[in-house]
Image (tube, rainbow, N blue to C red; front, side, top):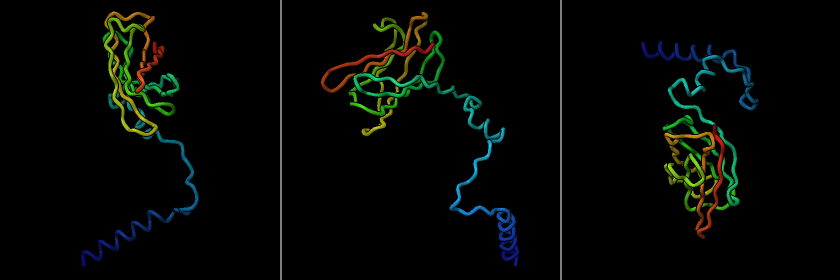
Length: 157
């Protein structure tokens, strides 16, 4: 008896919840403006996570990379880099660093990649030197199977 009363109550609740829904499944849903609660859920900084900054798209020897980072550009801080390879030849290795082109005084990081088919995502870490100057940049070097290399810089100040 108790089970049939519970089943009837669930069926009634389901009917009431769906009673106002006149939209068929073949019609696209109207997009409503997000509520304040929904907007705050998309702000990852509220969880103590750093903001993702899009640095732009670079072309290194025909390899197209979309570069993003998290972290702050400040002496001694670190930058987590994500480079999405969207077109062109696949490099064998990727290095990144923050500093001068020569890399003197900088920690160069050899990145790692995920996947064999485009888009391929590379990850690297660049540490800002303790004695930063305004002319320092983010540098990315790609090395290919034939030994050729290509380097580019991004201003991220």
